Image (cartoon, rainbow, N blue to C red; front, side):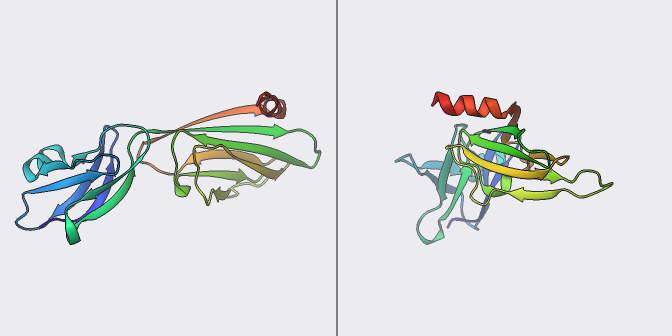
Length: 184
């Protein structure tokens, strides 16, 4: 008795755990990493709600569904992640521009979720060069220095379409970055 094909379903209104029920199974226990007691979910309740609705909170949680050998485990983001990207431009060079991109998030963000693009200047229909963050973003700010040709542009975007990531981009000057650094 148990479940198979455990998955996370991100909707605009809720985060759900979905799974396929094995034959002759009418209930399962769901264990959350930080709770001592499991939650009992019946097949009828599961069908009525379209899955197990994950409580809204900020962070990443691990869930185990089922018991013994048939148990499956999965981690998911349990609330909307807020990502702040600050893009500042250094003005010291006449040939190149250097952008300082600082990213911070209120919870860990996987590497595939956010990227930045360099758009070539003075070329019609040129495709952007796309860069990602191999290590993802943690709750500690990360900084990248991006060197571009003088007329190239930088954009930052979220690639995940689930709607659980809020990206706020602010632009500033290098002086703003230096002020923030000196205040620490």
